Image (cartoon, rainbow, N blue to C red):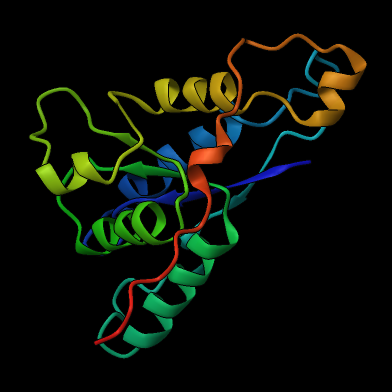
Length: 172
C-alpha cells in the first residue's frame, strides 16, 4: 500500500526557491527511478504549493488553513521543513502529532534553533531533507508490493502502533 507524505513547511513570505526546492527534492528522493531496482510505486505526496496563495493570505485565510488541515488528515507521514519559524508549519505539526498521531520527521538545518514546541511534536529531527527521506524509507520501507517481489529495503520496520488516533479530550 502506498503511503502519502504531506510536505509541511513555510510558504508565506518565502521566495519560489525557498518554498519549492526542498519539496521537489523530497519527491525525487522518495520516488522510485524508472528501470531501477525500486520500480514499484513509492510514496504519494500532498504538496500545499499546488495551491499557491502567496499575496492572497488575507483574502483566503479559511481556505488556506482548512485545505492544509485536510491534507494533514489525508496523509500518513509528515515532513516538516523548518528553516525558520512558521505559524502554519507549527500548527500543522501539532495537529498531525498530537491529534492524528501521525509521524512527523522535522528538518532543522544546522545552526537553526529548535523550539521546544517543535521538538515535542516531532517524531524524528534531522538536519537535511536527504536525512528525512532516508528515515522515512528506513522506518516505513518500500510498499508491501515491493516486499513481496523481494526488492531490497534499506532496513527498519514500521512501528505504526504508536500512531493510532487518540480519543478526543472531553469537553467541559
